Image (cartoon, rainbow, N blue to C red; front, side, top):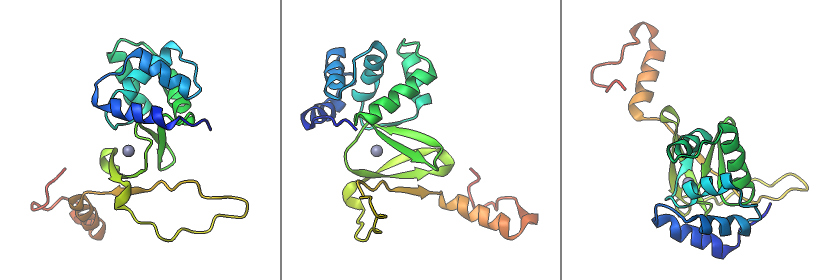
Length: 179
Ligand SMILES: [Zn+2]
């Protein structure tokens, strides 16, 4: 895997305050990551790297690209996101092995995932203490730990347990907010 030099990562992070990076800045970042700055990569890079910490799916970014006047196919967007992730410009987060999010912050942190809302929230790295990890199998070493903590709204869980306990009364009781 190609790694982005730290100074570029800092520049990208510093630029997160601005709404947009210039095409020249994105070109430089792509080159530093070992990627040829094609038109599609620059267009998508400007949408991604100039923004604050975001977690996007290929479909989200595809919508952004269309809104910004870049008529790229969803497949191109998906491939480009994976290339950015392979080059260390983005971090890939897989949820339940099927849905991929791409995180614009490649720094150390973990995530909450709200299943019912398909939403990701950040957990700062310092908020999680992992003091015992399993030994890796022979011939392997642990390179990083990605933690996804799944969340359910308390009211939803209560309603589900209630309808499971007595299927005849599947209606949500009035004191619980129906969602
Ligand atoms: Zn994140």
